[in-house]
Length: 151
Image (cartoon, rainbow, N blue to C red; front, side, top):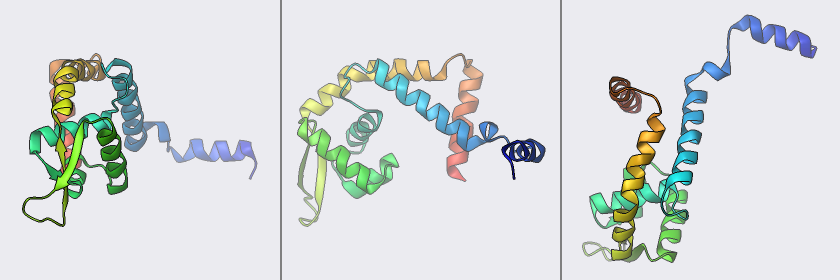
């Protein structure tokens, strides 16, 4: 089939990938990550590292498996994130007091201090990510995203 015929067939089938939810979600995520990196007050901190630090602050010392569940980040990625945060002195590793075979990740005082410093910027990043959505649209977006995740 020629290129012109391929294009004609695509136009006829009515499928426009740019209008598909997966494509739109990916683009929104890319936009969010760019906003985060451009506005976070610590340029070495990634959005996923920030999420991991927040999970440790909120949940307390955690096994890496638990961090996977809390953050929805895969096991291999969380291992790398923990290693980078540890190298910066933001987390430390230690034995689980209930099961000495397990290693837990703990937020250090430096990690807690960094969170205190960057959370105001993170709030601003959320505002920038919402863009021109009005308050009702923001609530609707949050509701719909959570509903999609629950199904």
